[in-house]
Length: 174
Image 1 (cartoon, rainbow, N blue to C red):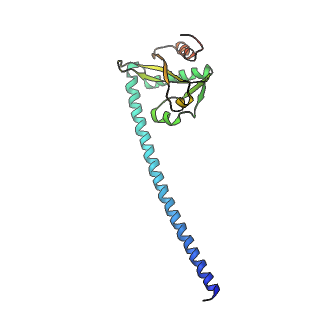
Image 2: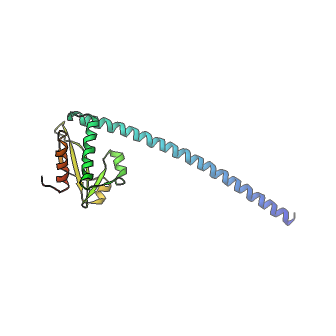
């Protein structure tokens, strides 16, 4: 066998090895892509199941308010708008994971503190209330852990809600 024939055989072996390696790599990619799609579908279904549970929970919470779910959302949106109107900065990227997981609302920052509104139901009562929560620790805000600082009913007027927000922010006294 001549030197050229040996080189040609080695080149053919190398090309075959590269092709086999490429086929294995593409096959592994396709398997990983299938797993990724299956995991994504599973996550989507889990999110849909969680959203359904959250909606059922919200509906059970708002039964005692005399308001529809849409009206409760409008009241909570009004409080969030009041945060912004009074200088609070909406932190859309903060606590996204727990907001999605637990249905928490947006966090606002004002004067070095973090605020959020939500609905709360006390064990001893079937009546739900709106709540303003706060923390001065950014690490707690990042995971949605806040202390409830003001609780009030759904029947308040817009002016009364604005006043509660200003009091919670420390702009006015209770």
